[in-house]
Amino acid sequence: MHNRKIAVHFLQTDAWKNFQESLGRQTFHDEGSGWSYLAILETGTGNSRIYCPYGPTFSDEAGLEEALNSLITLARKLNVTFVRIEPVDPSVIPYLANHKWRKVDYQHLNPERTIVVDLTPSVDDIIAKMTPTNRNLYRNYAKKGLSIHHSTDPKDMSPFLELIDKVAQRTGMRPHSDNYFLAQAESLFPTNSASLFYVKYNEKTIAASLIYDNQTTRYYAHAGNDSDYRKLSAGNILVAEMIVDAKNKGLSSFDLYGVAPVDAPVSHPWAGFSAFKRGFGGQEVVYTGSWDLPIKPLPYHIYRQYQKIYHSVRSHKQT
Image: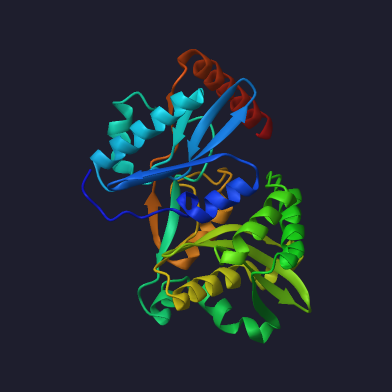
């Protein structure tokens, strides 16, 4: 592990902290020389944890160690069952494994892999790295009667929610509740930390995406589309526009937010949208994944065994 520039993920920002607090959740922030974290207290039946989504953030091993020690001290003070972290730098895996942290391997949490598009080249060069299909769709969408819109008004969320519901009905996915998405809009839209992009055809919204922005990166967080209009490929056009808009805004990267491994079977639940995301250029980035440190070993062991059984049974039912 070497000294490096600290890159703070959106889920470690003040904007995400404020959103979590708007939901009534208790958050904790600490920082030192070369490290920081945002942690959230989460409680469940029979156990509780402090969760550090895509964190802590650190510049070297000394910073990581200080951040983890701070989290452990906080966990003991709060009397929680365990600490869960998700550092983005995979070089820390040996350190975690050697210090009694345990990889969460029985369920998908925040994605461990993503595709990140570099926005430092020119717009023409960025578009050139997309597939020929996506380039042509983006350059000619207006000829098909499509229009792209951008909003930071929470009142514009209704079509997005309807599209998310349609995707859930079509695919069986379990999305966040409407209230959760609306709370995001109310908390994040006023500071331009999140916004809504959508495509209209004949005055009807047929695709929409909720994105997050921090100082350097745009995140393709949530998206829905109307399958009745799939031949128009509105989702492809929308992602291309959001990439170009992020470039014009001065951001340096566009995070497509989660893909399956390249060699994943077609049966992988993320296979379809992973192939879709790989059509916009970019480089694959592999994170550390989710890791737990038991503070109360016996309750944690019971919790982990229950979770393994639950997710195994659920996976079996889905197949």
